[in-house]
Image (cartoon, rainbow, N blue to C red; front, side, top):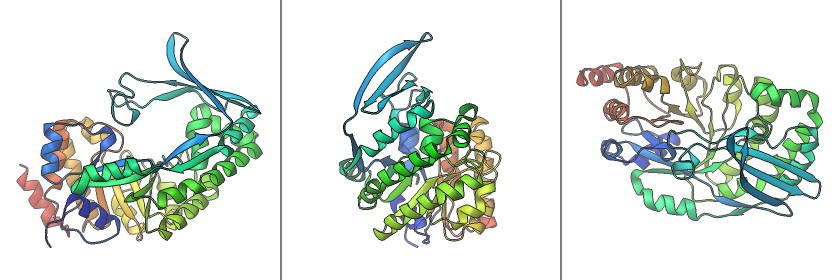
Length: 378
């Protein structure tokens, strides 16, 4: 097979096609720029770039933003005033936020909320008003620009928010201290009413993404079987994936979901979803499902593997061993891509070691080929 470009490898594998080598890439939002990443890209590493396909306008809502001192700390305070009431949220931002990729700080720490938008039952009607007065407007320039800049170096994804129910779990109510689950038990009608409003509101957003120039539509979930148990997944998540996938597939787009947690309890339900790509799946010890088992179970899906931060934390030798063991687990290497990291910055030394293994992963993989790669690194 003629040598493929990085872009061709990622897209061909994602469409369940045959590639010359196992595709591997780094995510732009936390990718270091410099001599090491340039060398790794020269040796076959691609790039994935996530950008939105839309902008939002919130009508008939006054939004004020300011920096405040609270409990001796500076917080970013945002107030939403509507005809039915007012809600606010506070956010801590690490140094470098807004000056580094993807709103991350210098140390790769994302901003975190110290006060959620929804604090009690009285806040649900206000947030529902905001949701119902949010308009999604197509804006394809960021995607077009990224595709022009990247060329054959990688792919560009349309990044979409958390699933409607996970927006409540993670963003607006929060799960710390069991908050979401308390709300779900005590205020079920309010939770489900807002869930339905979010789902309805986002239908135009799904359509905009499906018609965009993005290579893949990426649902920025954080699926973990502890946070999203099977009952919640089946009731709230699977119907939304059905809706999203129908629109994406009508326009020839692949749909991916970020599932970097412990998904063993969800594995049979995930098999029933129309998702094309399970993105950021982490094998043990961070996850609880091996990539080999997942490939056997999800025969109509492609897996983008999230390389383990625990291996990186132990240095290049551990990175090499984990990469080799991963290759042995996924023979013959079909329906697979490897992501250098889905959450964290990777040191130059670890990135070079990972590249030393994966640049030689010719397909179809065999145990003998992996043994040869291992011998070449000693």
